[in-house]
Length: 201
Length: 297
Picture (cartoon, rainbow over the protein chains, first blue to last red):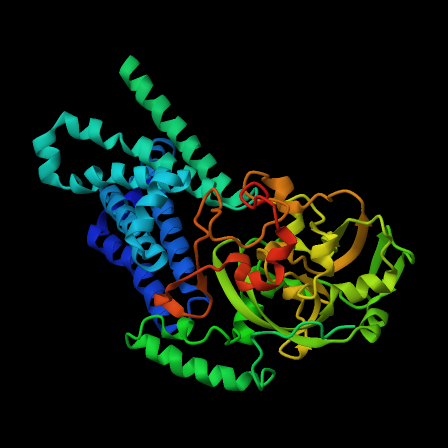
């Protein structure tokens, strides 16, 4: 058996629930540290940043699943839903931390969403993820049929918006957010060129 | 000179940090059981702890993370140190730090520090008035501005390999701002030598302006006739002006400046209103009489 097949056989043994459990652990750990005062000197900003970055990393992971299978044969398709829903979980947490702990004032929240482009962009990305999270179940796939696939291509809009949001909030010319955005655009290019090829074939 | 101005934030036993820490621990515990925000709101006069002041810094020469300076600033050699004072002065020279210190009157100044990122602290600085240092060099009558420059030593500053800003970091003040008795050169915190991450061995503190104006680890001061370039203004003139006075009515393009969060309040720390000139309006508003502060942000 090839090593890729062996790895895939091993991956088949991993129940999705294990991914969910492992995926939620960092959130519990972050909040535990924040509550006990060991996270950092400014726990609100740290929570905000960490949950946002984890969410973005998980979104990137969902984009990696197909190219990974195409180029290496490693098959994570079965776990992609878990990765996507975990990404949504972290981004929803990121939003809630911003709303409830950071900004606090409801009047200010709306003003920020409308007036601050980086928040507008981030919020738009989140809104686009909501229907994807709601339809990430077998029943929706059955009911929506082909339209499900069309709907889930919203990810190709939502994820770069997330990357852009990260770049736009940085002070000065910072490399890390640009690397994230570059990786996202690279993966989108791979995905979209594959889709185009399939349509032409 | 010195002792021109008395701090409104003076408490009896400021250097005794343990007293503050005990009080904070008590309030922090209360915050934990739902007394939300008690710690931050507790006292306007209460300085932040040594750990907060020296563990949460913006000093991009050592990285852009708030903990990066505390982690990496120890790489910086601060002794020997000298400051070149030149331009429109009578006695341009390299002034050794020890010589400067021996001629200055060091006193305690408890100031609010408001970062442009909408967080704030209260810091018990030790320092002397910048006016005294400038008088040491003899300011010439045609000087109108003061330019400052931070050390640039790539071998000891891992952050400067990144183009986040143009190095060296530079800042500037109008001469009347620089000569104002509130403007100090800080050399200590809580009665101890100022740690590297806070701008050792000497840094500017201008309490009514956003924190980035208070340039750290200064190696050069130049008196000039024209307005000097400043780092954040060069990086993004739309977001950071030359004056950068704390002003709750003029928002940063990407966030509101109406409120701030006092560091140290924990997870449920409330936002508090930001005061015009960071609460030093009575002392400094006169410097800007007749100026449109919305345009001269």
